[in-house]
Each structure stands twice: as C-alpha cells, then as structure tokens.
Image 1 (cartoon, helix red, strand yellow):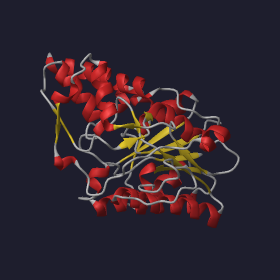
Image 2: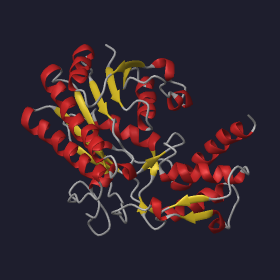
Image 3: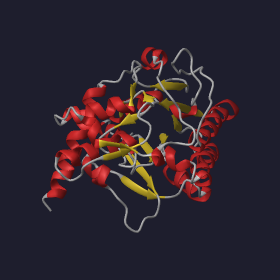
Length: 328
C-alpha cells in the first residue's frame, strides 16, 4: 500500500525538499497550508513538484482543524516543519511565535494521540535551543539548552512535549535538532539569502551595498536538500529517538559573505557591506557547531554539499532570478 505523509510548513524551505524526496520514494504527500487569498507556491515550482502534492487547509493554532486533518488522512508519517522560524522577528512577535511553535505542536500531538496513534511524528527542532550551551565548542544530544530568543524558547517547549508524548503515551515521536541549513529557496529575510541575493544584485548592477548586522556570529551551515534525508531516516528506525543534524564544521557570517562575493569574482567585498545596528539581535548566540556522531553512526547520514558549494549554488540561483527581473 502507498504510504501517506503529512507535511506542515509545505510552502517554506524544508517542506518542498522533503516532499520531493518522499514523492520519489512513492509516498502520497499531503501539504498543510493556511487559508491564503494569494498563496505563494514559488518554492514548490522551483523544485517542479507543485502539481504532485495534495494541499489541505488548516492552521497550527486551530486545534480543531488539526484534529479534522489527522482524522481524515490518518497519515503513516507526519513531519511538523511549520513554524514562525525567523529568529529576529520572534522578539517583536513573541506571542505568535509561541502559539505556532509551542502550542501548535501540543495540538498536533494531541491529534495523533486521540485519532492516529500509529502515525510516526517528526518534530523540527533547532540548534537555536542550545544558545549559549556547548561542550568544548560543540553541541550534541546531551548539551544543555540555553536558548537566547523567544524562537529558541518556543522550540524547547516543543522538543520536550515531543519527548513527553513518546514517554507518556508510547507514541513514535522523534526530534531532529537541525543546525542551520540553507538553499536557493531560503526566505530572502534570512541572512544567508539576503547575502546571496544582495551579491547577485551588486554583480548585475541592481544594488550598490548590502546592509548586515553581526558578521562574527558562527554557524554550522549545510544544504537543506541533504538534511531532509535525515528527517526521513529518523522515521524509518525501529525506535523513535532524538538526533542532532549538522556538518560538524562552522563558519562566520563574514565567511559566508566572502564566499558569496568570490562566487561572482569580487574580492574587495568590504566596500559593498554596510554594518547596520538595526540587524543586531537583543541577545546573540556566538557560535553553533554540531557534534554529529549519533546521526552518522545510527542513521548512516552525512551531509554531501560543502559550505562553498552551498554558497555558490545559492548565488547562482539568485543571479538567474535577478537577471530575469533586470530584463523585465
């Protein structure tokens, strides 16, 4: 029988890559989306899978809608990727961030518990939960959480609720603690796409500078298309568990900027970058770097796309996009 998967956050970055992977494996894929008057399917079109997904309307902060969806589909696997995921906005929209990222998870888990207890559940957790916590500069499954943003705090609640439903009710619930992962369909408000889009515009003569905040923050950056494979593998294991997913290496925001300008043949990058205090966070996380022993040994997973390849891929996609705009 054909397996059924429900993906929340289908219009974001990870949803389309995961949907593509599952479709290739023969799944029937349902994508949860809110009611929009004019929904944006650009990311799904980018991967050529828009017509292959069954869209279903619902909302993470409307428990009744989630109950109805889970009852009607009874999916084999549920991947909860929905979130207010822009860390910077979480200070200004702390309530909304909490409702979607924390309470939404509780509502979805309750729906599984009551109506589809055999469904396997994946929770998109994040390295932002660690914040200042580290073990000799690394973070792994045993590192204490010390979140530094309303976003990180909301995700800690969701993480522990996922663990609690596993331990309390015997549900198959797993957390993927993913470190920063990017792609050509990353939202342009995120610093990585802001950089690659800005570099592309500078190269094409459409902009003169990029305004950025903290260039010293270091992150473990990988390719979203690789990371969704780890999500899938987590739900194929005999027992549910929690896994840190990353590359094991980290680079600064400045490194990302340098690599992006290098991809278009510009070496004197400093004259194009403006530091704007508005883009600095109230509480910064200085560095995040994954220790990936568990995911490598237990799932046999490892990222394939290098940091330099990732940045080049994103810059090239933004060059194509902006080239089209330039000639309109």
